[in-house]
Length: 88
Image (tube, rainbow, N blue to C red; front, side, top):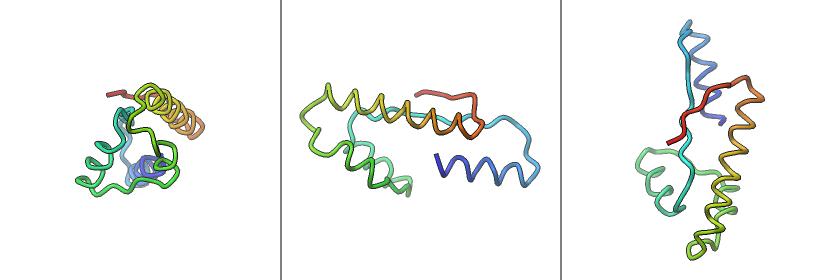
């Protein structure tokens, strides 16, 4: 969320007024997300590592954690004035 909010603020400062819609991809497999993030050069926060730690063989819990993380991200973005979201 911090990256999106910084981007939004830089766009506003540059006079860009078009809508910015954050895209959220709920995490289905943490190891795949880590590989994707590494290819994109995106850091993964420690709190996210901790949430998914030890869940490689527990898809039901992983799904609940992924939904919880997505809900938290939406809530945080909404508190910062974001009202539209794209879910992959």
